[in-house]
Image 1 (cartoon, rainbow, N blue to C red):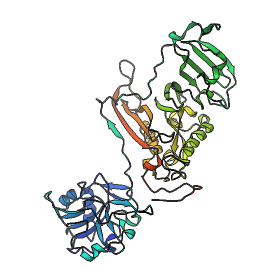
Image 2 (cartoon, helix red, strand yellow; image 1 turned 90 degrees about the vertical axis):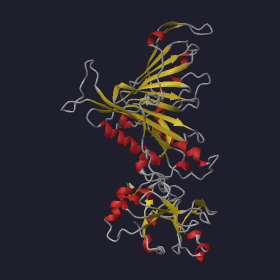
Image 3 (cartoon, one colour; image 1 turned 180 degrees about the horizontal axis):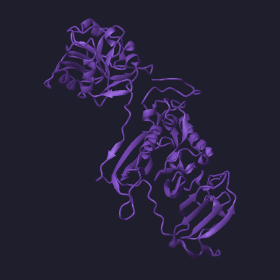
Image 4 (cartoon, rainbow, N blue to C red; image 1 turned 135 degrees about the vertical axis):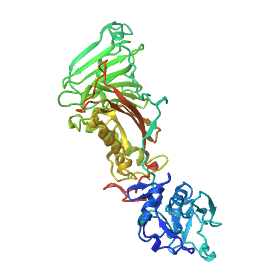
Length: 504
């Protein structure tokens, strides 16, 4: 339980002192594991020096989240606990008080302490133990002489003194009767091919075309130019003015292809693009810059029968994506380093001199984060990118991130589920939310865990209609902060080469 019993003043009433971190949801955290009050009671019973006497529990907020009450009932003894964070100063005084930030930017307790101590009894009742934030029988002199600068918040052993870290969020399960259950962030809505077929007139007396209009044997561009003022994609600018309700099909020498569909005004609203079949494997029409207010559809390169749908917003960046992954491991042919570097640079630029934070988060490292991971069959180009904190992208213990809380850790968990017999991840979706100087503040990941009936060999069993027999379908969601000021899962240890090293 840490070394607190040897560093603080003994309880004047002879209570057994327990120092443990208590999470906001009422669990004891020891190392990387959490324990219910009942499980923690078993740990105490097995502790050789605990003899069943009443307990002084020095764990943040333990009296306000039901932990102390349940521990008292389980041990059949009284438990005294604080209602707010617990602190000790260099003289061993114990008190309960909220956090505040001092003039030097360090976290310290609010003085005078504004917490309370309550004694919880096995019958479920509780009574006030003192009239202020100090433990009972603290002398008047000690109350007047608290050293706030040396005080440490308790429950984290020798790592105490930093603000409490946020718990790793667990995926939220969405009820089947909720509109969110089968909601699609990006729902492909292009009209049928037949509505884009046949002769098409062009405006201003230009010669008509037959739709689809095919432009073949095109050299794939290595770099794109800026967006056209008229909104015409680079690949078909030679076809201006574009015909309404038409399809323009571009076929590249590397095997990539793009289909551009116009609306009644001749504006491109939908683009279907495939990857190359030989180097370079990228499709230039999926790279920066993208067409604003346009839907894109891209086959899953691991399984072309599956596809990804992307929504591109008015800012020319992907705002949402929906599709079905096919986990096949990494495929470096379909990585696009240029697109990753561009997305990475957007994050750096946004926080180099942020309008709200100035240069506070300048040391944070950024990455070009895939919406759909490479091993899922997600495209490598800019269409599948967003500026993402590198700690979350790679699962590093950096910039306030830890592995368990990271985007990467969740991707790995989805892959593990999909490895099970008859198990699939379907309707995998990503949505950008908020805007922090051009970077999404939060990124939502939602997916469905589907289990199909299998035979004794683990093979999926088809039903009478030839389709797999579905056993269960569960929709889950995680939200990932992408604004450095909102990330607090661990120490803000900086990557090598940044301007600062570690803050807490």
